[in-house]
Image 1 (cartoon, one colour):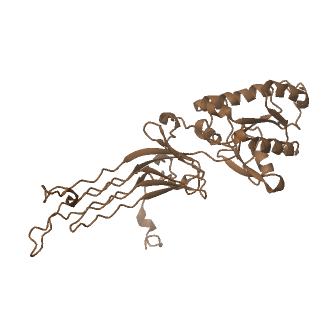
Image 2 (cartoon, rainbow, N blue to C red):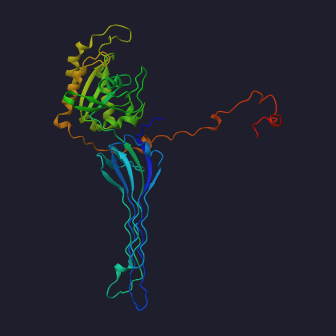
Image 3 (cartoon, rainbow, N blue to C red):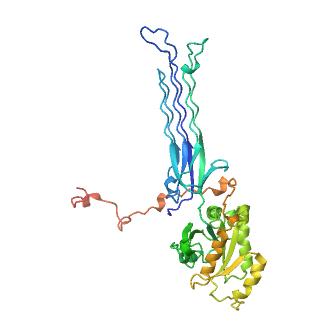
Length: 393
């Protein structure tokens, strides 16, 4: 099981306010002391707190219930009830909260030390001391505390990065990330090698740097849930620049790019407003069709591709080190454009019936390993013949 958890569903409840006290003062030599009931305490709130030292929601995976404490009741002699304790939930920056029943967007935490009140605690009730008047000098009632708030929420982590890698499986995304940064993603020659988002800090000139995120490969139909589907598409919503990668060995580079773009559009049309850069990876490999016939080299196709798509297209090879510096220059230029500085996205409601993951299946008793003895079938168990050899002492 991976330690990267970007989805949790928990039940939260704030504390209810304490009831006000109804009390009439009684003392020797003071038979008509009047009302002196104190106020109830405030219920605790459920608060989200951004923490840049967290990168996953793993610490919340097994906390299915998070509840603040109730406020204390008021007492006599105008004694106030104790306030309930707040429950502070530490979350990584980039956490988005949705209603667990309707899927409506509630709030998001983007900055370190940012505090968002998810559920407000109930106010404490007023004691009967507040209700005394000239015509009602001995009120025999007090105010109850406000009830608690409760709701089931879904928390999703959307990774904060400057550049997001988008491509089909085996397009060379993980290899590129390992070359331009110190990240060590798993690299292999089979699809879906990357199962969790990987972040890397790309070093640039004069000590400058930017953050690049690699997400699992996208396939056609990912917006409907195919492959890893919706699970990781949300991690590129916050990226300032979308970096598309299509291998040079592809039969139709433009068609594959359009498929990727269409999947992003179906998931969130706002993604199309982001800056885009296309890199043709593995340009050092020979281009052949399905029948083994040689295809034109990629350098001859680049001018037509640039004209057709209207974006910057760069040939690169992570293994051979071709075009890496030019790629960094292009990404840095896009990142520093004024229109790409503000990364604001509107969080559309989610379909809780689709996004909710299935619970991990419980272990079947029939699948448990059993110790099988050779004589288990051939003869009946006779424990008496094993006594006296130490195992029963």
